[in-house]
Length: 268
Image (tube, rainbow, N blue to C red; front, top):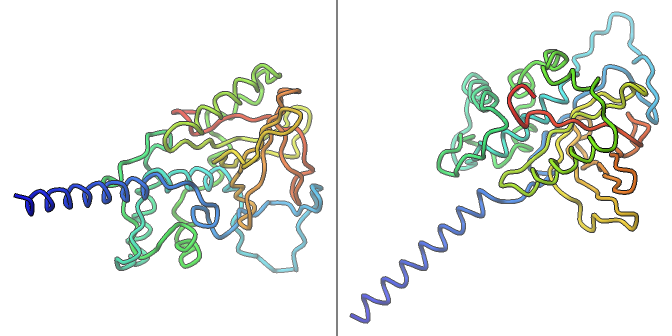
């Protein structure tokens, strides 16, 4: 009887440990170096310190460039996080099978709840999205979706809505709510229309930054910007001014932006 009790106790502990490991795998936090693409969305124009200029090109040169995919890339990163399980020990798919698997992933509505670990779409042969995109970038670029249709997304017309402090405060509340929910991510449409149009961009907000609350009541958020695969960017919410600010970079002068959520609901 003692032996049976010990055996039952051992099995119970093993089951609990296994469940814990599975849950940890499903709920692991977002890691920029693991869960984002290794390539960039290139801008149509060339930027220097936020100022645009025509991109120089040699006569007869037709460079192969990957442009106008910021919304598509932000959406796809979220879909991989919510619906995919990587299995590096399994054999990688050939090009045709991989293309079909990627299209299957990107057809899952991005606003849906995360899949349970057992129900996730398997991506064999790679440990994460970063390693997959390093090894097979062209297959991903050709199959995550076209960039130009995002200019005609139903939710784009919202940029003509009133977007004063009250509206942006509501957007900030939704951002906070999304990040607190399981598998919570927030794809943000950044613009400063109608004051200007020097940013018209899609990014993925995935976490509050450590020590995020500043002395003036601002909050800082970690952002995956498809134009920059090297490191996260920062989106800030100013509680005092009730507005969002995006960091200065090569392709944006920095400062105030209007934020709209996309891919949070159908037709958004």
